[in-house]
Length: 158
Image 1 (cartoon, helix red, strand yellow):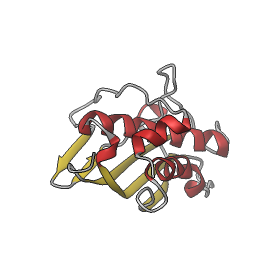
Image 2 (cartoon, helix red, strand yellow):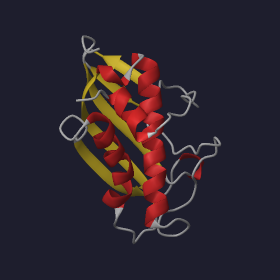
Image 3 (cartoon, one colour):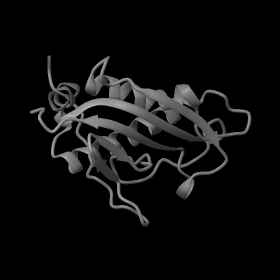
């Protein structure tokens, strides 16, 4: 079975550079065996943010891709904090916020962009945790999604 770092290579995924906090917070806090991430935004390969309301400015597929980009940003910050994603034992929880129209109800389908990425990187068992996906009227900088996650880590893992 391959490691999370090897799976990224096999998937042809290159993580973006970690972003710097834009306020008074840390991207990742490690407490005991848990690594908790702040909310991460969808950043494109060119460094631009994916902005807009899902269901108004963006369709479901664009929302899904925005969630995947936010997931990649989380993995980037996590790797920077841990030196390797191979220290991740399992995903515990994902909270996904979707900037959307009031009548939009496909929040889980949008956040699947992140959840499926984590499953593919960490495996079916370790990469699927608990999750909440909710719609909100606005998000910082007008982004389409904001996602945070909590992981169990094991420093003994290679």
